[in-house]
Length: 541
Image (cartoon, rainbow, N blue to C red; front, side, top):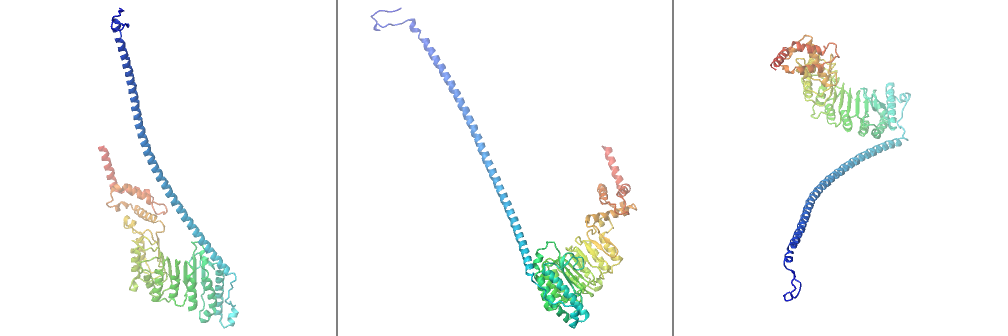
């Protein structure tokens, strides 16, 4: 209904009432619902955004963890790389230092070689205008001056030898080669073999030649420096007789010449006797071998000087003193050489020096036996052509049972008989038992009048041959197992293996290893018990 009355309080404005007033309430609800929906949607969107933010936070945390891991890995890798680089730098520095040292050594060696070569050529240049000033007379000229035929021949031959040797030295050459001492020594050297008549007149006549030779020898040092390091050099004085002046000249010349072998033979005489020879030995620090042969009439004072020079020499390894004693002084010479606690020799020869053992009262072989039993560095000992007997051989044989360093013993041409030979043989192969054979000396080659022993350089081969030899000889009488004693039968495989290892076919008298194996398997009663025990064990299984 529309109220058109003008007397209302609304001022005449249209007023809608009744149902229309009530119709506005649903519209508000719808608006409210719409607003709620929008708010819910907004909340949902906010929740989604919050979820997205949370996911981003998780991803950020993951990324932070990965970054931290990468940082740690980078730091570790950086440290490892740094250590590797430092190691490479260190290795590079070491290699550089090594190369620098090698280069420096090569440079120094090359410089030394060049310097030595220059000095050698300077020596040759200095000697280009050199002339031999000592007069060399003919036999007739010497005879005209009053010398008899023998004296003239001696002077002529000696002056020719000294002249040839001196001229070779001035040309930078060694006068002689190969067998210089007569003992098979090979190399380069000087051999002065001057056996003849000696008196004051002949010595005075030869003095100018000796002066020329000594001067050339003293100036010859550069020639040694250009030789290969393994070249053997030797000087041999054979039958030389020098007065005080010439002895001093030769001594002075030898001080600067590093000969590795020096030989004095056939009644050499130097003023001062053994004192001069000992001085020549001591002045040469390069000396390795000394040969003294038939320098007779040495007394106890000479022995003291010679043995002292030998024992205190820094590089001497090989000494040969032969046929120098016809009395008991040979024993004292050997005893003096064995006296030092710092024995350095690897080879010693005392052949033909009238060595006596028990018959002298003091048995030098007792001293020698004690010396050998102590395992010195001596590798070769030559006692041939002396007067050692069976008792001496027994002492030496007992010492060899504990010696493992001596490789050659020459004891032939003595008074050693069957008893001494048997003692030496048993030292090398005591066939009392397999153990005694194994404990015998397998390293020393012994040369006596009647037998040789330990002929192979390989110690194990010598040992094996001896053990198999005993097994073979016992096999011929089928008696091997009688000597097995308390050997445990469980060692049977080892026994058979040893038979195989020690077998050889070089001697027709030695039986085949199969024969020894057959004997052991057939005759050793413990073997059958072994099989019986094994059979019972199988039955139980």
